[in-house]
Amino acid sequence: MAANAIDQTRRMLSLVTYLRERPGAHVADVARAFGITEDELISDLDVLPMCGTSFRGGDLLDIDTDGERIWWRNPDASGESTAEPLRLAADEATALLVAARAVATLPGLRESDRDALLRATAKLEAAAGEAAGASSRLSVTFESEGGVFADVDRAIAERRRLWLRYYSPARDELTERTVDPIRLFAVGHTYMEGWCHLSEARRTFRLDRVAEIRLLDERAEPPAIEPRDLSEGLVQPAAEDPEVVVEVGPGGRWVAEYYPHDSAEERPDGGLRITLRSPDPASLRRLALRLGRDGRIVSPPELAESARKAAAEALAGYGERI
Amino acid sequence: MAIAKAERLMNLALCLLGTRRPLSKRELRGSIEAYLEAGNDESFNRMFERDKDDLRELGLVIETVENLEGEPGYLARRDSNRLPPVSLDAEEAAALGLAAKVWQQARLAGAASGALQKLRAGGMPEAGDPYEGQHSAIEPRIPVHEAAFEPLMLACRDRRPVVFDYRKSNAARPEPRQVEPWALECWRGHWYLAGYDRDRGAERVFRLSRITGKVRSRAGKYTAEVPDVVTVRETVASWAGEGGERSALIRLRAGAGYPLRAKATAVREGADGWDELEVPYGHGLDAWLVEFGPDVVVVEPADLRADVVDRLRAVARG
Image (tube, rainbow over all chains, first blue to last red; front, side, top):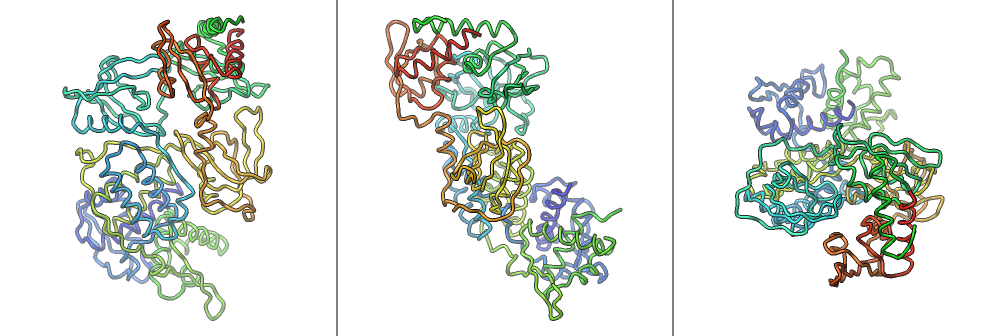
């Protein structure tokens, strides 16, 4: 847990500066200000009384808590060392600046938020000085459809139901649906999570697949559901979904990068045998067609057959035979 | 029980920040309980060097100054370690609070919260509830699933040449590449590295998910100049077939292929149940068109038509 020791040290150094100014601070307030749990704060407060400029000289930090409030009885013992916050490290400046710049470029973001981000970025760059330099080595772009983003954002703020014409690539069709929006998030692309009245289930919609959107005057009443964990992949196949086996040559290895899969075995030709799961294997016909000579569906056989039929039918459109 | 590392680092930081004159290693060892318990000189020295590196990682500027006897002493001067005053209003504080939650990578997530805590200690106001409708409801997240990310981020920061095995998109086997890393960029949820490829003697862009095995650092300096502006996105966008200058004419069944319609520069509705579209012809258009199966027929150019027919034939033969 070496990384944790670094994070904890960094936090404790800021904490002593913060506490110095606030005798009798409330545990709950300090934990909120530092974005940590009360337990994490208490464990920091357990360590601090062992710290000081010499364990012999009796100048250890006399920081004490009754679980509700925090007192520091000898703030002068540590001299000037805790009087001011420390300069930003290169990684710290990078982490905040890169993120702030990325969010500020999101199309559809409210202008007041964008302005606040840009002002904060400029102040932070000035305060970080040289440490800000490394942040030019990282950049992130979020993709978003500005108009759709702004409508979803407004619908969430005003708790209104949305009407969508939405494209589903699996079926190559547009469907009309009403959705009670729950949240708006960006992970590379920008998505809305909402309660879909057409499928009577929670659905995630990619904003660049929304062909048309309207705010309705009805109130959105999504059922209370646990928000999904965004650190997991967005597509989480279920164990009971049917299995699909795809064999690809070297030119089709990208399949393993784009599709969550159970296994990918190396093949002697430099290709892969990929086993994945899909709630609707028919939707993978697109993949079979796209692969061309770089791979083929091994199972289920109906899927392989439907791809062959589609290709033969398409060839007929060119007046070509197999 | 051994003294926790955070306690040891905290003590070292307080000693170095609190002193006005350089402290020798001997003095520090006498002041910090964990160092007394460290055992012999060798293990103390190792621990001490590592701790100094860790504190530098946190942004502490530690100076080494020799005293009259030629013995090195250490101190962290206040004026080189102080955060200059930053006056952020509540709106700006809320904006930074949102930005700090974006990273899904442990090191950068820790660094972002650390930065926010320093600003908080410097008096940054606390934001109100972000979900009261005054701010965008957006939750941006930067995904980092690639193991190569952290070593490459550090290599870009410290300008260290690296070696890694890389498998090109259509290659059967990975090959070793020697690279001077310039910058990392995340686009559509994937990370890319731009840098100078020493064997090819030119700039190259690498997709991090295609790096196999470990990224290893190499000693020495960069041999090529690092450009001021690195344009990863343009390169990747051209891989993705965007910015194609040519145009293709296709027939598309009515009602089908919405994404093709969204990209089309011209659409003419036909009376026979088929529409005619002009679409930009960039890299990868052939594979994309084949996905629509019998709902698309390429009219021109002839090379695209031939590519699509070729691909269809491969699928039809199974």
